[in-house]
Image 1 (cartoon, rainbow, N blue to C red):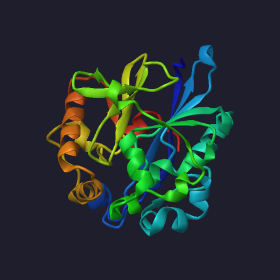
Image 2 (image 1 turned 120 degrees about the horizontal axis):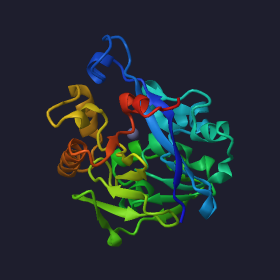
Image 3 (image 1 turned 45 degrees about the horizontal axis):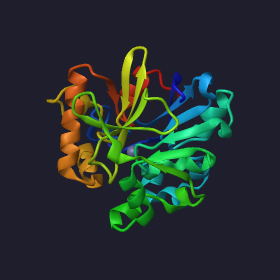
Image 4 (image 1 turned 90 degrees about the vertical axis):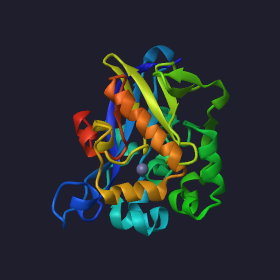
Length: 281
Ligand SMILES: [Zn+2]
């Protein structure tokens, strides 16, 4: 069983939303929002063979080269990445190779999270079964927008979570163990944003860290139950939600978890938490 040795916070792309004052809550009306795509690169201890685990993959080098085809017009206009931002380049800069990535834990399979999967064809890709089903079938219009078949055409080595064996985590969450990893790394059921959306919890020497994916887009949701992000970003959160009631319940649980200090919770696209945690662009 591999355990955690070191966590690197990396951004594998960005969203430059228009009208920052309205879409982010700070900056001029003509400025753009500074959202990141916060992934984790985890060095696992050598005792069990070492290697690396990724939490989400952001965008690949191919997405960066050909955004219109691979990401669609929305992300091409409002987001993307610059050369060198992919998870693969981060892995290489830290002195590793693609083959060192043994596990990829996917919060969900939206384009901005799953683009880099093809750069790590040998990795076991852990995902919630409902998320995998939705991404493979792409039945609804919204699914055809949010998932890209091109990101899965290399046939990833999917490892579907055993949701029947969920255990309780931090009082009110359901958590799943990840085959091949110790119980210091868990996937946490955070439904609402997409069909099988999860967070990833990691026990560190300073306590639990919870990457909550896109359970919220804007970090202000987590600062206090009374804080609200700008209406424009709340609208985007609603537009992309899979289940409104589940999303609201998940958000309330995350707010309670944050308030009682059970974990340091952060969202994929929040630039403030990324900076706080020492993120590398
Ligand atoms: Zn996202």
